[in-house]
Structure formats: C-alpha cells, structure tokens
Amino acid sequence: MNSKDYIQEIITQVEKRNPNEVEFNHAVKEVLNSLEPYFNRNPHLINKGILERIVEPERQIYFRVAWLDDLGKVQVNRGLRVQFNSALGPYKGGLRFHPSVNQSIIKFLGFEQIFKNALTTLPMGGGKGGSDFNPKGKSDNEIMRFCQAFMSELYRHIGSDVDVPAGDIGVGAREIGYMYGYYKKIQNLHTQGVLTGKGILYGGSLVRTQATGYGLVYFVENMLNDINETFKNKQVVVSGSGNVAIYAIEKAQSLGAKVIACSDSNGYIYDKNGLDLNVIKKIKEVNRGRISDYLIDIPNATYVEGFRNIWSIPCDIALPCATQDELDLDSAKQLVKNGCKIVAEGANMPCTQEAVNYFLKHSVYFGPGKAANAGGVATSGLEMSQNSLRLSWTFEEVDQKLKQIMNEIYQSAKTTAVNYNDPNNLVLGANIAGFNKVAQAMLAQGIL
Ligand code: NDP
Image (cartoon, rainbow, N blue to C red; front, top):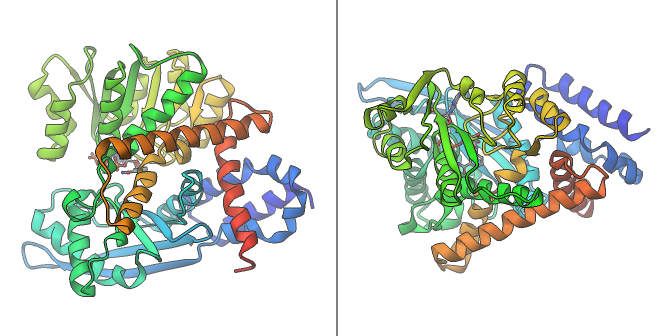
C-alpha cells in the first residue's frame, strides 16, 4: 500500500469510529494529511501500525461531578480526562472548564498535545481533560466546591509519573490552587509534580503564567527574523483577552509592536493608539469583567459586538489567542487583502483548515499552534523539573529556558520543512518533526 492510500484508510476509519466528533476528525486529518511525504521516505513504517495506534487514546475516563451551588441546589456536570499517548513520558495537558466541552473537543486537544509536547523536547506524553462546567457568573465558593468535587474523582487517575494536568480555558491559578489543595488533603501527599500552573508559594514556576503568550511572541520573533524583520512598529491584532492573549500583548509591546485590538467572546476593542494593557489586566484579571469595559477608561477606543470581525482590522501580524475555529476562510481573505504578513496561533486550532490553506497559498507566513503555543506546556515541563529537584529557578532563568525552547521548536519545524522541500510550510515541518519523535519511541517500546 502506498502512503496516500494508507493515510486515507486511517482517516476513513477514524471518521467511521468517531462519527459526529467534528473537532477530533479535523485535527486527525490535519496531522495525517501532512505526513504523506514522511511515509514516502519511510515506507517500511507503513505496516508497523503506528497511525492505527496513535489516533486511538490509550485511556478515556468519564465521571460525574456533583456539587452544591450557593442556593443549596445539587448541580451535576461531566468530567473527562483523555490519556492519549504516553510514549514520551507521563500524560501531560490542560483541563478546560467551558460549557462547550465534550468528547470531541477534549480528544482533539489531547491529540494535538501529543505532537506539541514532543516538539518541546521534554519527556511528556499527551493528554487533556475538562468539564462542561461554566465558571462564568459563579461565586468563588461555587468555583471551590466544583474544583473539589472534580478532584474527588480525578485524583485516582493522575500522579507526577502518571498524568500531570494543568490549566486551559476557564482554569487558571485559582482553580489549580483549589484542585491541588484537595488532592493534597485526600491523598495526604504534598506531591507537587501532580499538577502544573500552581501558585509560586506551593511549587509553581515563575513565568508559567506568562509562558504561552511570551512563547508565542518568541516563536514569531524567529519567523520575523527569517524574513529580515522585527516586531518594531508592527501593527498587531490579538484575539481573546485571557491568559494567552494578555501575555502575548505584553511581550509584543515590549518588543516595540503596536497592538491595536483584542477581544472576548462578546466583541472586540480597537484602539488606534495601541492598547493599554494595564486597563485590560484590570478588567480581566481583577474584575473578571467584559472587554467592552475598556471604554470606561479609554473612551476614545472603539468597541464592536461580535468577536469574529476583529480580523477585518488591517494589521501586519495576527495572533488568534481565543479558541478553536475562530478564524475562518472569510477572515483569512480579509487579512490577506489587508496585507497581513504573519499569522501565528496562540490558541489551539483557531484557524479553520480552509483558512490555513488560504494563508499557505497566499504567502502568509503561518505558525501552527502545536509549535507556536508550546511555550505553556514547555514551562509546565520546567515546573515539573523544579518540583523534582525541589528547587526554584529565577524568572530570568525560566524565561531564558523558555526562549531557548521556542527557538529550538522553530528551528526543528523550519529545518524539517526545508528538508521536505516546502521551506515555508511550518505546518508540515511541525507535524513531521513531532510525529517522528513519537513514532520512534512507540516503535522502540513494542506493540502496546
Ligand atoms: P482563558 O480562559 O484565559 O481566555 C480565553 C479567551 O478566549 C477569553 O478572552 C475568552 O472570552 C475567549 N473565548 C473563549 N471561548 C470563546 C469562544 N467560544 N468564542 C470566542 N471567544 C472565546 O484561556 P487561555 O488564554 O488559557 O486559552 C486560550 C487558548 O489558548 C485556548 O485555545 C487554549 O487551549 C490555548 N492554549 C492555552 C495555553 C495556556 O497555557 N493557557 C497553552 C496552549 C494553548 P470570554 O472571557 O468572553 O469567554
């Protein structure tokens, strides 16, 4: 069988086995379709069952999460953890709390995580989890009770050498703190390596909060460097205003970029003078408010309802940092028409496949999420190392290591793309580089 037929056979099998899992099928197709040149060069791997195994999670855990709301009413949510692949190390990946969470979304995120973690060069397998719990509008006590109820089941399945969850959408330092505290209590164990994204006082790493956003900008610096450009005076649009977006804005601004817009799920703000990040941090990190509140402090800015239209703003660099499928073909066309030169994904799979294809065809230099946003999990890996050593590195030490890892991820994707005669295709470069590591480890460990 040739590579093309082999890949198509696996894609068809995945679609048949996982009907209605739109996001998961999309992620599998995106990775597998870019592996054809790899299997053309390595035809002896076609009958080793690598793809057949890599698309099937090693383990999936579903559980009921029952908790009491402030009115004394019992609420029930679903908890989920997908332990996808442990060839390179313990399962590692975030927890997402959002009403949209379902099996397809967690599987797509877990699948992506396998290759992203491989690219970091740290010993981490791939996993992901979460719940359809909606943290919006909940009191602090409700958040705590939910996190404790969630951990009262998850604890059985995780551990510093087994599976190490972290944050994602809706799960930040507060939620990790509540979950870590409960784990410690019911296990009677201060085993810091069981979760990452912890507070600094109890085993967290400096820079973890900033890591995904900073890492994204370090990755884009590499892209700019290759086209003899820098961030200086570039107009940048960032979607979202959560953890990834805020620290991408911070680092881009510190490198001289003018960031003119960001959003939340209701709409976007445009400030032609450049965003005031202190105002955004106050709204999102302190008040947990809406991005439209920006106008209270900066009345000259503009607020527009509907977050998708943010891509109609002319810019040099676009950084989608909110959620999956937020940038579609129409948005891609607008960005290209307005002269955007670089798009890099801070979020996981924010660009639809059609949008990515359009960028590649129209010479927009495109940084795929599994490479560009790997700084978060890389720093989680550094947090695990510090926990094992029982040491804390300084902010500068961790930041330096993060920068080094992002440079290496870029070089690995770029070199692979060049090696496969498609030098500007970092999608192909990242997918093949990440896949090759996992495939070699799986081969070495036998049929499992
Ligand atoms: P946060 O919860 O901190 O922020 C998410 C942001 O995206 C918010 O501004 C939110 O707006 C917006 N958003 C969420 N859902 C939607 C939606 N359905 N439509 C439009 N906007 C939405 O999450 P993070 O910043 O941590 O994560 C953002 C993305 O980055 C996700 O794709 C995540 O998987 C990815 N990522 C995160 C990493 C991390 O270290 N945190 C690591 C690697 C990837 P609102 O407040 O209105 O909901």
